[in-house]
Length: 333
Image (cartoon, rainbow, N blue to C red; front, top):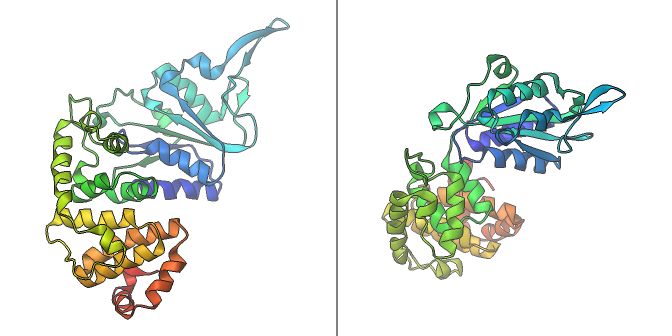
């Protein structure tokens, strides 16, 4: 499944109160942990993230304390005591077998020693696969059989939705729209390689005018640099957003086309600018480019609470309305 589909699935588990232990599999750097955290936040649930590979069995079981000649295990303070929430066991199969055995008790019995997980808490876990070249241990079959198993793969559309909403640099989004195969590319024997996580890191470097090779690797950084060199050839986006784009042609070169529509989407700060961008595209670009841009443009306006205002501009423009009627299946407001 895609990251967006994973988010929807986890959302469904919470909405229907299905407390089956769930294991999320996927390559490193695609946002598994972030999706779990965002899902918990969306439902206003407390979120506890345990990196099992960094814990010892006693860290989870607790410490024995003598009481009246009998040992009693005092559980750690980081485990939940009441209420509802998401207990997330990250890097589960990076943990050694002894630690996985301890986790098995938590997952199977919802209990370790004298500690019991409150009824309102979901138990979810995540891990990498052997084919991801991660130093993982085999998961014991009794433990595996206690989980729902969800496999997640990187996908550009899911990343783009996240990137537009969280301020990833427009150059990076445009480059990956042109080269989606470089969203996630595990390169053996190299420390730096492209992944959704490393592209977010690259945003900070790029904004500071630093090279991004330390985040995504040298070869990918060189391709990105060559792509950015083309940015001087894209149309005057500010003129278009101000409504002065009547005589500006839409670029025919694909890399410039992607750069143009991503640039318009990220720079449209209000409904009027979004309307000018959409109107220019309707008149200057082929329908497939208009649709590609409009899906993200409309989504951004909804996030900003400006969709009603944008609709007001559109209702006064017959040309734009006609386009929407023709492509209403994909352009629904």
